[in-house]
Length: 250
Image 1 (cartoon, rainbow, N blue to C red):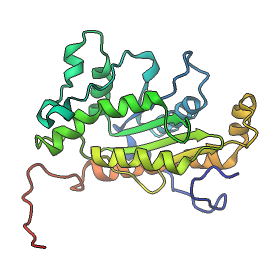
Image 2: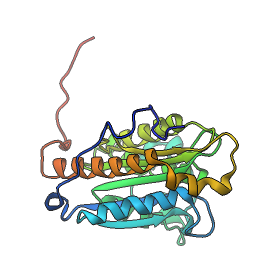
Image 3: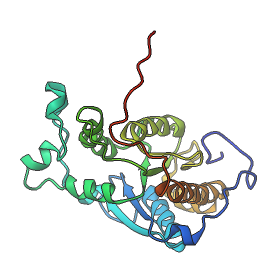
């Protein structure tokens, strides 16, 4: 079974390598949404670390966050009471002294590229990734309710692995989330792996390492996000603050 969510022929659709000179100064953040208690055993996390190594080899600076290592409270749904109550800084970050979501916020606002990695859990991303997504609502709401855009000229990539669950379904959900936040996404922004139906997870990492599609997808993903990141960083492709909306009658 191929790793690419839409299917393709190996070695045909290749992304040219980025220019290391243009990658100099780029910041790439990897966020692992695996709930594995111990570091180093999550397979999606291993692929993420390899992706960061590739980015580093082209001169980009990298940062890695393992959500499982942080104390992150659930979103308390302040938006449901009043959109004006969903603010950045997040109310929960200010309410709970031991909440560490601000570490994640700071890293995202400081980066040029964000790569999210998640296993598939019952045809969806992990519960930990969902907690992260809901706590990011204040970033999105800062733009659409308060008119302050916090995500601009930033690029996103995804790493998704599972067995008989759906890569495309998870990717669609996460891409929708990233779109509303304001991230740019190139065509080849997903690295994935789909395991065999027997679901013998003891063999997964060996099969991932031997899977040429996953290897090629990972390289393509990193090349794509780096190329887009340096192309838009000093361009006018970002969305300016306060652009007037042209009135259109229906």
